[in-house]
Length: 165
Image (cartoon, rainbow, N blue to C red; front, side, top):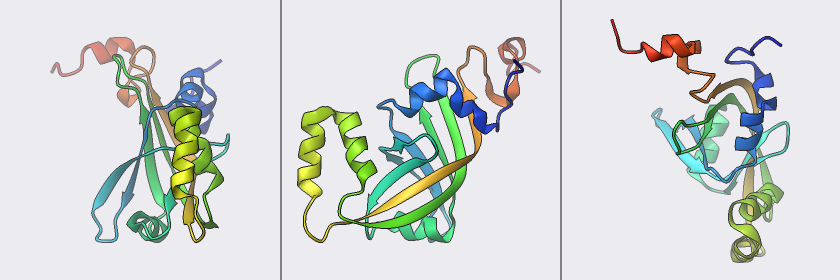
């Protein structure tokens, strides 16, 4: 099989990407704020096999900013060496939800376990709670593992020569 190029959404099907998509690593979503400056926000997420979903409470500033400029970037990465990094670009679609978004529930249980998840949902599940479901459908995917996939599409040999003129 030919190695998939950076940008190919089929990279989501790789073992490394699949592991990161169900991990407890925080995702970081990058978007352009209302004042035109960039923002990066660490978030819990849920992957449903098609979209990466971030839940937010209604009224959060990022909701209007993402609605105005729906093209976003997301990274999910490990903190060990060598790192594994999943990069996703896509267009976000926002849906308002009365009550707690189902993906918020799933993410809280996955990140914190049963006791944490139940406690967190009990904290926020009240009459009048409104959330926004930010669904990102990947249109570009990159993957770096620093073993076989390097920045810039370099080979192992090329990467070992980085910084040398």
